[in-house]
Image: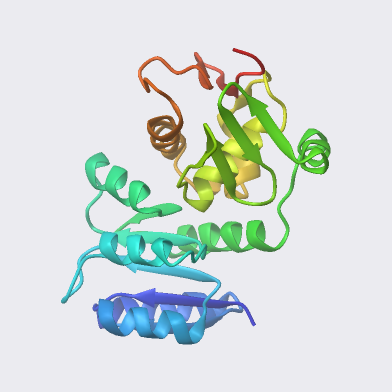
Length: 236
């Protein structure tokens, strides 16, 4: 059975999220601090991780970084009362896939959870993406995206991207030169248009540019098409 894990020291939230998760048909486990959470993560190997930022012994950003440093690609959603864009940027940089601010509607949590898990089990790809994946590699300039491998290379060196950053870049690389709208990106990367805040795309694009562009303020690879969306260059 699909398993959802929570790391949060708030017992009332543990109960609430446990009820939501089980109601939606998933297994559930939780830990109240970072140390116990990391031990449980290794033991339970959940399909989705919900992570509070403020914990008794550490913070969620450090846990997220540790999880990604181990090579674990489990989808991670931060759950926190801190909703400003600075904290969101830190979370995404640490390797998070989503961000839900407390207080939240139970249906919103269910919606995002279903979208993330659906994307994990049945990623819907456009026909161009399927063709590109069979071809194996998108290459332009010094940048290479190796489809299906979560592997991006810049000048031959591997670029450390989160799973969501790679999937966004892979989607754009599936049809170089063509513009993908925000709705298309949300649908194919997040699982549905309602599954995430469209502003999250802006944050992810900025983080990707910081890793693949020589000058992120003057991108050559990942291009913004004003009022439309984003594209990857098909030539330099």
